[in-house]
Length: 395
Length: 226
Image (cartoon, rainbow over all chains, first blue to last red; front, side):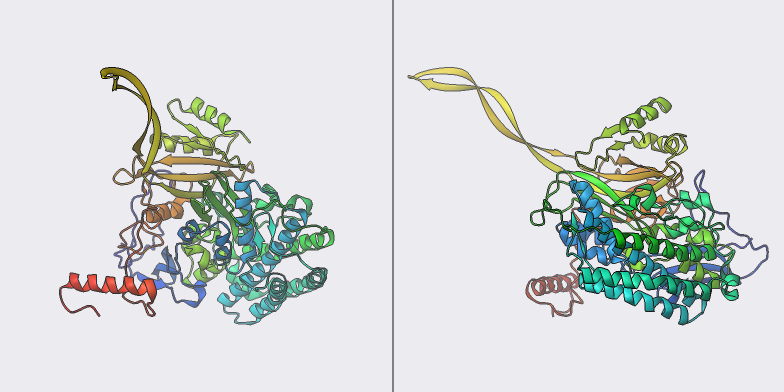
């Protein structure tokens, strides 16, 4: 066995009883161990994220993720300002999916203050959240292909469709990515009939894109060779490590918060939860692909059924909003996993405690477990398949 | 889903000296929590995960809360003898007055865990633990050996709040850099006064920058403040 004399600080303290980290891989031969600091400027780390790797030849022996390059103490900012003032900041957490961030925060505050949301606003939230999911999954598949060396084409296909959805966001909310759309007890502005017609048109065109995108990639020989059997995540470890979202479902665990909590009005829609079988990178790619199709189903139903009515609860208080003392944890199924907000109110205008439960950070817990024994080039794919956004990891 | 009272009864039946306290939550969310005794927290956590009916196999959220020392002003009714002079004769009478007394409620650091069950699809069950104080007795048992998802989150609590988790396999700072001294999420944290590189200092910032440079120059003992 090679003894690691580490410059990057490898070597952990003794494991406690019952600690289910995989055993350290022994190479069996005497040799030099190479330590690589991958990132923070590496293009495939999706931002400023660093992995310290210990390599035996091409194989990964140890992996240590390092965070904090984008840390701005989002939670402290949230405690220093009123409840509503944090809403635009939530856009900047996972900046690809600002609308689901808005929803998670609004949901937590509504739980804390016991507010109701009008039906039309619930429909608009579902429509926007599912559009966000589609553009996130399409984008993340595109980036995964980019990481694999398929430079450009799939990403451009994905971004072409993402652009149509971002245009819709801009028409409704005034911004493509930093939407700041939801409010406690509803949504900021109502959708016009023209907007809904246009949304229907865009959604009607999306299945064609998904078919094309899937045909382009699914049975691609290189994709299958590179991703099948790579970065396997076992079911029990995934649950124990708090993994959520497509990553968990690719390992075959049927846990979708839309189905479990029925937050909003998700119990009214007919959709399935796609599950993987092997828990490898290919399964994650396929689960995302199938989730796009399920989101399209929800979108079709929601755009058909959306009722008329107000989009803001008339009793909702915008100015001087002070929830009674207490606490609440609200969570939704964001495209990346379980996004939760935990709030403690002391009766004042600012939250006493404002906590974000970031799916991207917690999904990285098992990065080392998935990468051990794999080649360096596969680590890039495994990280790409986790689908992280550093704005949310570092907060 | 069992109520917190039922969960407490189940814990007490399984672990007789667990010392679990129900913390009510007055908010409409109705998420009441259970405060654990840190000495028995591991046993209770193992029970909650392993119990067939609860099966809380998924720790979703772990976070810290800082409760600083609080000065509480209370009005207390005090009865005391008063000497009065009535018609030139001294009389002693009892008199009841209201007095405002101040006392300091000691603060602590609190850790909150939100548990769910993937198997039974229920939750959340909220657990809390408190440290003895905020300065030198800040150790709490780590739940990472039971739920791996606490690994990074407990590191974050250690980093930002300064709770030391005993039994955590890799307790290092996670968001702040190594060598950083304070814990930024504490409520009495003061921003560092580093205006060395302030490119466009103006108004209040300019005043603070000048103060900082003067102080830095005085500390160095060499060179003048710019």
